[in-house]
Length: 407
Image 1 (cartoon, rainbow, N blue to C red):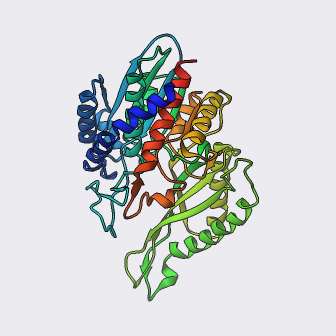
Image 2 (cartoon, rainbow, N blue to C red; image 1 turned 60 degrees about the horizontal axis):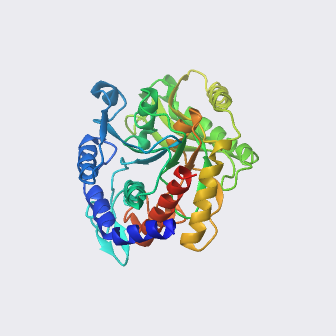
């Protein structure tokens, strides 16, 4: 049977797949600073070694630097077999810096007790490997296929994806019929939260602490604002999502900067906040609500001038009806390979998959990894991937591609 032959090929080449992933992990892609073109060059060399023609799509340097990064080259591999749908597989190579607390080399790709350790081993260089080797297995089968497969390896997810998938779509370099994007093995994700990030600056008047009446304390105004913002979460908890895996919206203040010295009344305070949006919410209405909330709160502090700057507006991913073939195939083969049901739901994270969804491309999130982000230690010390999850996810993806292109 074709599924068995796909599985057998993946088993026979699994050591090679693991080595491929190790080489990707050993080339750092910390973002920031975001100098990721060298990793793309290395990935392209490895893919060419498998016989794939690789398109390199560098983003103009000035645009990258204006975005706060150093270099981005996105990759596309196109494999056309005949008339039929184009299925794109997207994973991102950029990742947050390693940070402290590691007991394994974050760029070593060390294997211990069946786990491969390293920054981006789970999110999401693992799916560079699962998608590449699923495609290789499919082609090794020698079956008559209808349609095409594209690999999209991009380098901007940590900054929102606008210069990763966003760039490829904006430039008209791709328009797939389906998309499978990097994820974990025990759930098919069809929806995710959106995210609004803002920088709020409160301008007061600095003065000597011995003469506080001569100044306008921006920190006291910030304190009043923080009280209002945190009380707002009580309201947000009442707005429940109907998507499994997503609960309610919430707001987080992640950074506060202000003041110049202990003996100076603070003349300026900067807050950076993150407002997560459930799929049922309208992004423009959310932004208007948050701005109004901030303006009304700061108005209670006479003499304080307010500036609000939007840092990011990432729409939520909403399920598109056309994703049914993807969901059905992944669930069927996930159950067969993993031996348990694969549920469908949403995630409170936001991803660059939304950019495909905004273009009307039916998309799901599925790939190699554990049941939760927490289990993988993604964005924390000792990030790792259970290699058996990599093996089995590769089989699920290969079988899914076979179903979609042999229908």
